[in-house]
Image 1 (cartoon, one colour):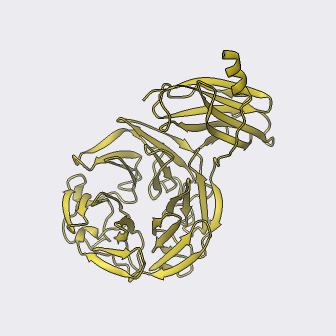
Image 2: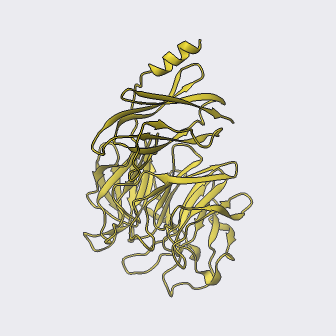
Image 3: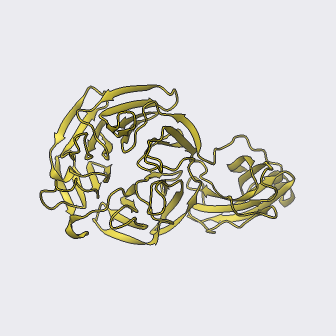
Length: 419
């Protein structure tokens, strides 16, 4: 039985491929930076932003089909830059930002999914802020950070507040975390379960800190781990598994625009962060969308402050990191880490050779019976040291094997999934 299993594993065939790196997918006919997106499956709607062509903030609502590449244009009542857009009960809710008269905007508005027009939903001074971050969870909108234009703050505001959309009122707020109501701006955030994870941002410098806000007990906790580098003005998006957050781009005090990507994991109050594959073009204040297993990034500013017109995407099935400046002198498959794991682990391998040589590489996962359960890599790769993620949330606990195949080289290792 053991001999049959080994032969089965070594002769397994991979039937499909996955994208591992960011690629330039398309271009925007009317590129903007500092807008935000509402998405309905493969259709995205980009609200507002700054345009190089108009040299001003826009009131555009750009509809874009990610598959057909069709665009259409509508308008909001006023221009907005640095706003937040969220979806609730088939309506688009948006708030904040600055308009073309350099005035910040109070209140929250909505737009029906039929896109027949904009309605003013509610006035509240707490929505008078630029470059905040926010999420709708259940019936509540959670707004985090951001500040009004200097001189427009009339009284104290809350760094974090919970706004019930059915009752149209604030139901909870935290206003004691920062002195003089000087809140962080351009933070990145995402939701895992009942927790909102908040990354970086700009307040008295660019931060590397990571915080967790629990929407049930309203606790606000600084995590022991930090971002790998300070960043603000990027985006955070849920990755291939619900406990994985991808933090993309932005800027800091040494780089006016970042290419770097970080991958954050949260499991049972244990946290881990590592480097991801960089995007093609450094940018900040861009927009993100997800569809059919891909993450898309659209627009934003480059390091010179010019609006980027390119759209990039990566396949979420395998977010890969390649350490380009490390030279491998032999084929090697390393032990996964952590091991045992639940449900995500890192697998690292090296491919030797001169930099111009291309190798066809396969990395496959099998169960204990020799059945292929996942294909992690199936593509041409240059020599280097690679790190990939294996996510096993859809698999049962037990022993699994992962295998590297490159030319005539084959190596297999064992790992243990414990749930």
